[in-house]
Length: 260
Length: 312
Figure 1 (tube, chains in turn red, yellow):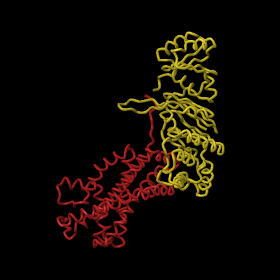
Figure 2 (cartoon, rainbow over the protein chains, first blue to last red):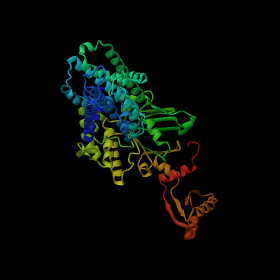
Figure 3 (spheres, rainbow over the protein chains, first blue to last red):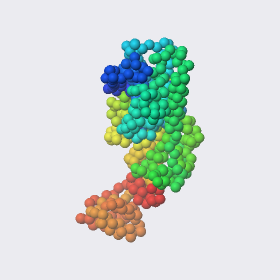
Figure 4 (cartoon, rainbow over the protein chains, first blue to last red):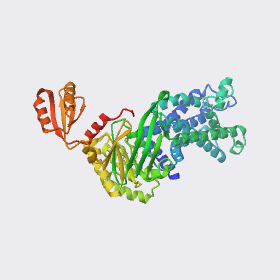
């Protein structure tokens, strides 16, 4: 099973790096987004309770999350292309477990997003942020869990999608608001009650907490914090649920009916 | 090698309706046979192919490959199968070798087994120099041959192909079929291919005709052609009305069988007297008259014009 997962994941990587425009776009877009938006709002934005934090710094965890989210989910678009070409059928007729197929695709796609995030982590010392060893491990855990859950979600959405245009449209309507209402752009708290509720039930908010909190708390204290524990549990359950849904989709064989 | 018993399949349609794709199909394909499943588009070939390749569960009936039921032993059956799909299943961004390596992982092949198979098979297919080229840079014909090599790397007992020469020029089609015969002879394969090209089906050991989901015929190409006798007269009338009149007149003769499709009339079992009579009338009424040996295409036309309408 490991060799199947690694072969399918490796394919995603080779495809990614053989398309230079895709590499440049994926790396440059979040950096530009972060610098322009972060600098633009720096003079006018102060998060309540985080008055000493610049917007560039506040926005940073949100950009990290955006990269794993968007990169992971949009990498699963290859499922639609694979189906239209016959590549997917070639994998489905092979004697491999359906779980290996799901994991191979998800691990490969999330790996692309995580590699971009690792590049962006270079900015940490320039923002004046620091993490201890446990903090680093918890940050990486948060990034991996978020990438796993949302890439699996992309897999589920792409599985029955007929066209890449449809996938883009659905994701723009669905994914962008999820990210915007996660606390990536503005914090929860001083908002209308309905908006606070939406943000609380948004799984992306909890994924963001997993990424933001390690920057501001020592790793040892973090694991004992209720807010961190809730975020970890929600993100774990979310990732498990999305993976289970993806497995269910792939395992469900098309069946006709025996008669009228 | 393949045993299909009483397979029915209906597709669900909007508003609770169903559309029948296969109607009580029963078929056996012996080991090491090259079997062609032919028929018009929408006849049920692709549905049956998807059932055989394990992508679709039949509505009812049983299908076994190599003595194993495909529903109860899916993984074992998949190990027996090599599949070439109608649409290209190579990743165009990857080299030929990288495509093969992924296939080897999916079929749990050792590196040494893969390397030996690659070296042998690429040589047999005349593709030895192409191993490190990106699949997307190869011509359509070469890509199809690479796909064939890929499908056989794990040495399956049964090769399934779904209209594998679609979109290829005649030269590439010829090269593809030569490669198939080469592999079949070397590996002792059983091959089942769907095709709507009758010249391809005529190369097979056995042919089945599937029309509107019903199996109309199954036999060797010669035995199917023999059903139409040795020779027939094919007349292309000036227009459909002339063809209709001719059909009525000839049908009165109990010695001959007449079939008409539009302006074309086919006469089987005609006597010299009838031929002479037709030739005398040729002026102005017929575009051409030809005497020819029947082909699989004629068998197909003959059977589908008489086929029942029950399985749409």
